[in-house]
Amino acid sequence: MVLSSQKTLEQNALRIRKGIIQAICSNKGGHIGGSLDLADVLSVIYTDFIRIDPQTPKWDNRDFMIISKGHAGPALYSTLALKGVIDYSRLNNLNNPNSLLPGHCDRNKVPGVDATTGSLGQGLSIAVGAALGAKIKDSGQRVFCIIGDGESAEGQIWEAAQFAAHYKLDNIIAFLDWNNMQIDGSVEEVMSIGDPMKKFEAFGWNSTLVKGDDVLAIQKAINFAIESPNKKPTMIVLKTIKGRGAKCIEELPNNHCLGFNDDLKEKVLEELKERAVELDMEEEQWN
Amino acid sequence: MELRYTGGVAEKEPIQIFNETMRELFSEDDKVVYLDADLMGSLKTAQLWKDYPKNVFNCGIQEANMVGVAAGMYLNGFKPYIHSFSPFASRRIFDQVFLSIGYAQKSIRIIGSDAGIMATNNGGTHMSFEDVAMMRTVPNACVADVSDPTMFKALLKLTKDRNGVTYIRTARRNLKDIYMPDEKFEIGKGKLLKDGNDVTIVACGIMVATALEAAKELEKDGISAQVVDVVTIKPLDEDLILACARKTKNIIVCENANILGGLTSAVCELTSAKYPVRVKGIGINDSYGCVGSEDFLRKKYGLTIENIILQVKELLR
Ligand SMILES: Cc1ncc(C[n+]2csc(CCOP(=O)(O)OP(=O)(O)O)c2C)c(N)n1
Ligand SMILES: [Mg+2]
Image (cartoon, rainbow over all chains, first blue to last red; front, top):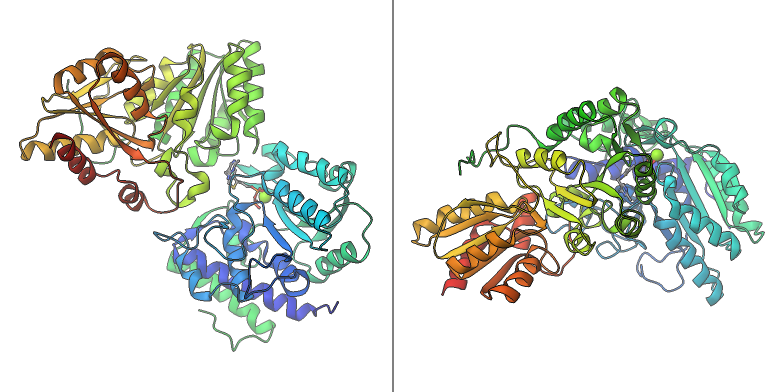
């Protein structure tokens, strides 16, 4: 397996962030915080690991990606555009009438989306089923899945966790977006999650903690899960910052779902542009 | 009866009504509790949470557990009101509501917000058309679709000591004022909002205001329509609906829900047994929700003044 450099991964993460802003601004608002903070992990998965065919999104033996926190649709859509699965122009239609790009991940409308999510708590079960199917087929397919920390209050997450360990589904590589935020405040004050690493370990999973914007650490963790299967599913806990990638969003007390006026858009794009200079990407379009 | 309907947006949004009514309830009765599942933000109840630490609890994102917790609190004499978006306050928790509360003869009030198309930009995954049908099948349940903020307040208060399952679905915003602030409501009593001779439009929720507008337009074409707000879909005001059936012989039902099992079904079940008349339902026809503005979704699903007029004329032809 050829692994990409830090710079390549960070460049793609920045492109994903730009696409998220494009999509969300097309409808003057949306679930920005929990989309932006996934850009780094999505960049790593889609640049180096997931085996899909952009020309044949429904290829039978593809690896699956299940975004259980369905409100991060814009992050997945932007990634799919980067990979050429959907056209960039589609990002201009988030939630428009007759939309081909619903804000919540929608497998009926958007090629490359494997799970329709939005009712929180259901995605990890779908990932588990897909992984079990791959085991039965003996196809070697892997399943990637991303769950939220607020979402992890749902009992179904833990039903799926138990199931995955029981059936030794080491072809699941899941991520917990541990941004410590949900709608009504911090996860600490609303419904504390405790130590998620220990929890998943107790459920029979491999579990590691990684900084959510450290692309090389994420790469290493995924690579380890792939190279050293031990009959256990893997949970990579990402210590993230909700809204990561744009300080003006990060700093808001609640950035779960925001309205976007031109002013805010300008500010965010300005920050992305600065980052683009650091990453030698200023020749790409930044507004 | 006197109405204050003007077509304008209500003076107080349902969100504001919920907040002020819960405050009143907490001070009247310290056994009243309000549980939410990480959607206080959408009802703007964060301040309530701070002000009433013994009455307000955030359950995090675990709706089914929230119902179980409510069932347990009932054992200690508490009177739970629980809230989530309507799909998560109905289909997501149905067995818990049915068994832990309904069958076990306990009491709960469930507020499902963003009912039907009012989920707008949250889209199909957040859009409940089936909640009315599901909740109607819980024995002795009360099911209401809020048409106006005054009615919302009344329902919250009226059901505090009601036994069994109470399900109140509502929009969070964009309701119209229909009723005078001192209007009195009763569970199982509908309101005849406008008299007429040719057809009865039986409506609930956001469709009541739409029905009033349609009736006004129909008047210009010489069609005299009466308009009923059922207030509670279950128990249904049988006397009122049957009186309307006898008088106009034609009924149009308007609802922001699936007509399968919804108010349309309820009206048909009643009239077909006791006084068969022609009934036509305007509502969601066995389909899933999708994303869009209220305006777009109204057009898509036919929940418009124009469609009511069209359907009335077809029915009367
Ligand atoms: C079953 C269900 N309950 C409630 C909601 C409403 N909701 C959408 S996002 C969200 C908060 C999610 O928090 P978290 O999982 O931590 O996501 P993130 O912080 O990554 O955005 C809530 C309560 C929902 N979509 N589904
Ligand atoms: Mg979170």
